[in-house]
Image (cartoon, rainbow, N blue to C red):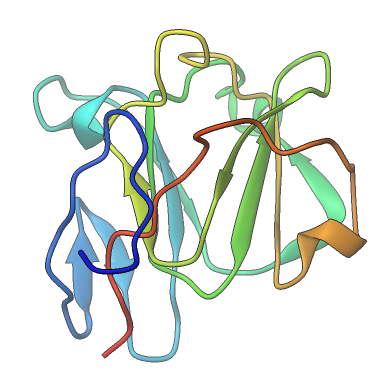
Length: 143
């Protein structure tokens, strides 16, 4: 895909109108970001999916509230927000750009997600950590 950066384990998908990506809804107005228990968006092994559409900039979310701490293996972000994820030690482990997804977070980050925030401008809010190399890939575009 022209102009798209690629990260390890990610694959390009074609743009879609209102629909979903691996069960994560994508409306024309309301967009979602989803976290999956298993790699490949739970497609090969059944597992839980958590999803949100609202921004969480002033309140960093703890996956433990949903008994999902250290259980994320893949994700989809169909939204307009940038999602940042941290581990138990509040070390940034990945950033999800709007309209991106990852089939597997990688062995070093698998089952490590503890906290997240979703903001339009996360660099000016919340917990600030340096960006890790190869964190995310833009995979589809708005119509």
